Length: 421
Image (tube, rainbow, N blue to C red; front, side):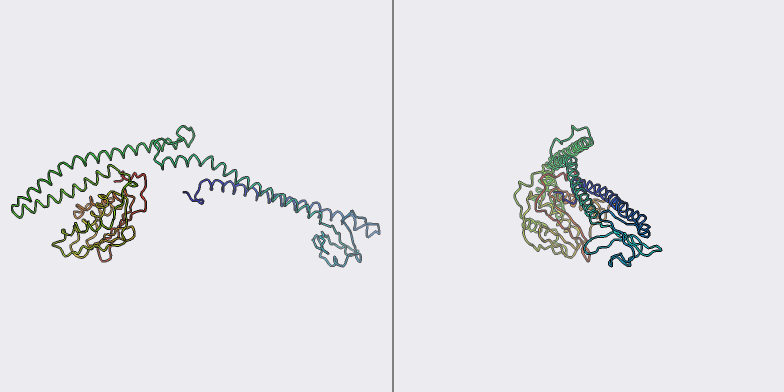
């Protein structure tokens, strides 16, 4: 399941909300400037108008009558709390009442014009509160609108992705004439092409495997006859080599045929990898009879794998055989670690060509030492890809290689890895 932070729906909704937030901030600045401008016009300008009108009247001894909330004081008539104020407009709170004050002086002394601002502050607070509620509502509306638009856009894409992931033969949305329809038709064409390639490869692999089994059986039979009849030591050795090579080729053919059939791994019985690894180690001990190489199986915690036993034996056996074939002295160690099978050897290491092919890189110039190794490791890589397992290679300190096969807890239901080289 896609995490929320990576969800395209969430990104669209967040985009809408951020877009709305930008507009809200823009209008907030405009409203704040407007409110402050209104305050300057209604309060500050009114105080200056009162100053121009009342100051000469008070000097002339004429009455200075102010509307409610406004007052003019000069000289000794200035309240004690308002005396000594700097000239100009200012705000001050006296006995809990907010006052807007214009202080000034002329040739006849100091004076102040006072306006009670409590009513205006209430109006200002009301305006800001209503605007804040409007902004929050606008952002909430944008969030839900973004979610609605995202669902309309992303839900068809999710349906298409789910159909592709489930291996549906007919993909949805192909009848649409918009960009989603184009995408669905392109996916359908590509999927059909991949399935055709996969089927051709499976048929080819199966046909080749069937065709090779008969001549290999004949070769093995002839080699058995030669070994049974005895003869010279050279003839017997050659017959044994022919029989062993034919047997190994027959094993490869059986594995390729099994891969071509692509059995459902979920329905397979579990294979004990401990017994498989132990058996493969015992099977290849005779290869080291005349060499100073110690082949050992150190065991580990047993675990099961839902897969054909032949594939499990082939993936371990090929690594052990290659290690035995190219290690001239030292140790070959096979062990289990968690759900991993590790094969470690003290051989010369992999040639550059084989390593490049194993890692999916461009092949390096071929090396004679890679003969027989590349095919075995390619088969191991193919089986691991089919089983959903990982194949890792690292250099062993002091020389040699360490191969690690990591088996998953569950195998994928659909696997197109057979198209991999």
